[in-house]
Image (cartoon, rainbow, N blue to C red):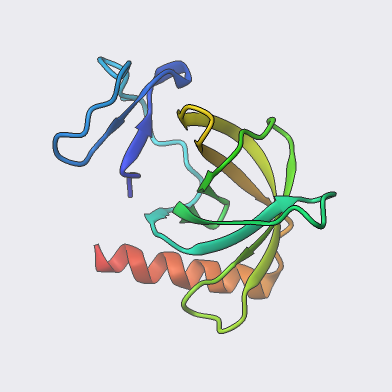
Length: 145
């Protein structure tokens, strides 16, 4: 399932697939190649606490834009360097307890100057219980359309 926002070719600009939401720099930037994702992705707004793995006292709260078994797109209030390891605590509907994961930043793109960033994360070493909860969530929301 496609995200509401799609990165343009070579990472420049993006275009919303929502009505009348075109952003600067998105003309002819739509990716039209094959979908190379390994896992199905859902658009989902789930609450996430996050911090740089080595910074125990610097926790922030946000929400996801989309989620899959391999990672997520998260709205953050700062730019992260690719490769930065992030500790996550996410609440999903099929587990009453928060899921704690470690992820690696793939990309962090500025959306609003010095205010909002879309940060792409790849999960590292997801245990079987958490994998099951993420998979159930993705499966449930993908069937809802």
